[in-house]
Every structure is written in C-alpha cells, then in structure tokens.
Amino acid sequence: MQAISEPVLIPPGAATPALSLSVVCVDQTRLGEHIDALSGMGLSRLHIDITEPAFGGALGLPLETLGDLRRTTRLPIDVHVMLTDPDPLLPEIADRGADAICVHQRTMTGAVIRALRAVARRGVRVGLALDPGQHVDDETVVALEPDYLTVMSVVPGGAGRPFRRDALGTLRQAARLRAAGAVDRVEADGAVGPVTAPELVRAGADQLVLGSTVFPDRAPNRARLAELRQALANASHHPTRQGASS
Image 1 (cartoon, helix red, strand yellow):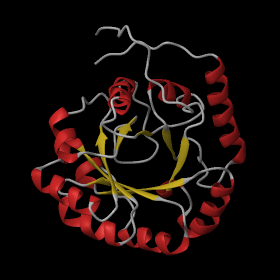
Image 2 (tube, one colour):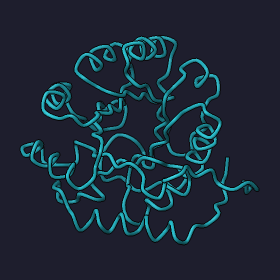
Image 3 (cartoon, one colour):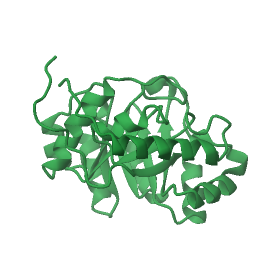
Image 4 (tube, rainbow, N blue to C red):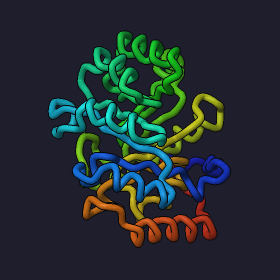
C-alpha cells in the first residue's frame, strides 16, 4: 500500500456532483409522484438496476419499469446491468429507452463488448462498472471505449449494504482515466449519504447515485437531501489531500 504523491484529480464543480435516483429505493406504487418531487429537489437522472440473484443475491426491476418511465419522464435513464450473461438483453434495454447502459467488468466478454458497441452506435452511452477495490482493466477500456465508469461503493446487488472503503482507490484510478480523457464521467453507486458523499467526491466521483441511505422511508426526504448537500458544501470549504492504494 503506497500513498500517491500527486494531488487527487477532482473535476471542476465536483463539490456539487450530479445526483441520480436509484429507482428501486422508492415506493413503486407512487413512483411517478416521487420522481416529480425529487426532480424538483435537484435530482437530474434516474438509475435502474437490472439484476438477478445469481449475480448479487437480489432481484432488480423488470424491463417494463424502464419502458414505463421512458414514456412518462424526460429525465435521462441510466441502466445498471448486473447479470451473469448480459449481452442477450442489451438490445432490448436500449429499445425500451435507456440513455446509458453500464455492465460490470467481471462479466465483460467479447460478446458483451460487441453488444455494447452496437447500442453505442444507436446513440446510447455505455459504461463500465467496477466492484469496490477492483482495478480497471486497460484492455477492456481500449476495447469498449466506455463513456463513463460506475464504481460500486458497496458489494453490488441490493439496497442497504454497508459502505466499502476500498471503493475510494478504484474511484481515484477512475478519476485519473477521466483526467486523461478516456471517459467523461465517474459515478459512485452505493451507501451514498452525508457521511460518505464527501469522501466519494474527493476521491473523484462527479455523479452520485442516491438510494436507501438518503431515502430510508422509500420516499422523497428534503431534510436528508439538504443534509447531504450541506456535507458536500462543508467538504468543499475544507478540502483534504487523500492517500490512495492502487
């Protein structure tokens, strides 16, 4: 474990990162109402998990939810694919209205890369998702040419899982790739709240996925969002230089 000597590569404006709603973490019977409310509170994207027990021990949302949301909201929709064999479903996910699709590095194969590049030609942004502490594979980045990286800050698969500090090193590597122009966005996903968000942003995240940590009652929580924003503002006034492990 060795501390890096260069400053952490924090993007301009990262103290106010883009905020995305993890759709599975709010009441599905009031989904449209909750999305409208949260959009008014400054959340600018939607995040949909498509997963299966074989991947992460949990079920995600059905593809019908993606199609329904595409017809009822103008917010961009990011789809996080957590499947052991993702490539057969990627064209349908694009057909149903995803603006962006990310797939985990550990399930990346030649067939998955070809499927992602095909949806990219249709105008869908493609991303590479990384587990906490996972090193970005340079060959995969070259082959896929992702638009963005999603770094999990929990063990992926379900809501309410504990924060993993080894995600910070992965975020720092992702931030260096963004600084080099390899990707244009670095997203942190999992256990994002007032305590963890400043660390995630300092490590390099410029987009945060908000779920059960901010919405424990499965409903918009203006006070909790204000607490998150205040924590980010406080951190921006007292920046720290971070060590990292690679």
